[in-house]
Amino acid sequence: MSPAIPSRTVLSAPALRQGRALAVMLAVFAGFVGFGGMIASADETSLLNVSYDVSREFYQELNPAFAASWKQQTGQAITINQSHGGSSKQAQSVLAGLEADVVTMNQPADVDLLFRKRLVPANWSARLPNHSVPFTSTIVFVVRHGNPRHIQTWEDLLQPGVSLVIPNPKTSGNGRYSYLAAWGHALRKAGGDEAKARAFVTALFARVPVLDTGGRGATLTFAGHGIGDVLLTFENEAAQVKKSFRDDALEVVIPPDSIVVENPVAWVDRYVAKHHTEAAARAYLEFLYSDAGQELAAKSGFRPKSEAALAKFPGRFPAVTLFTVPEIAGGWAQAQKVHFADGGEFDRIYARN
Image (cartoon, rainbow, N blue to C red; front, side, top):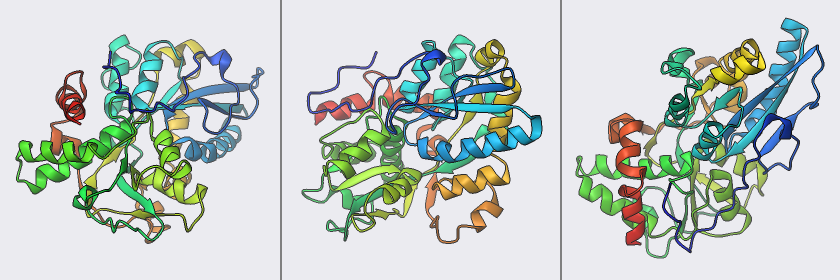
């Protein structure tokens, strides 16, 4: 179990409701977001997509497009139900019995967790193209109108008086990527000196007054409640922030260098076998790689793998020097062990603050 969160932390993400029978329509920021009717007839089927916190708007657009395609191909109506929360918390919920047909996460480690109970095979990432990653993102900065703190680089985040909002790396993939992006930037700049990287990340998290459990909670803390000068978040979430709040209220700053955020997907073998939904689940994930799926991903702020989809959004994705988790942390297994396990680097860094 993770250590207790210090008292200055606010936990804002709602608890997940488990079980397919409870997959009802909730409000936009709640755990389950349904699409279509909930009662399936013999000519209908349904899937549960367990996903991470800030992917909900993308799937709200993608699900009807897939349903239309599936209906045309098979003659069968399909309902896609959604569950959203911090990526790592979502993976734990599936381990605990949430019967996901598919998982669409923001870090491969959260899908790897499902192998613990043989919910997916060890080679799950080899079953779809690009190691089962249909699109990527990166970590960017969201600032107040006019960028009053003049934030452009990672070093600017450490200016006197700057307050940051970052979700908890213990529960959120968004938080882990933000932590590793800062670590990777500092490590690369220092020529591999881990002591300097540690000092940089320690100083960074000293400026974080609130640790929400997921990326959407962090967005609400920053944009909805006006806390902090800079929000660190996924590029796709930054795009959603611009849509959801007044155009002149917030701005997005792309740092010169940042981390590659992978968005892995998998059908959950045990549950698709139980629900007799493997064909639909696989088709749903393959649709993410289609021209329509890639274009919708780009529209939602994800960096598509398809060059054709990318070409339809000129200027949407500025060039950034990108590094990967294996390059700066030895891979996700090593990153978890060193940085995010109980008593690891993050616990020690946060305790110092």
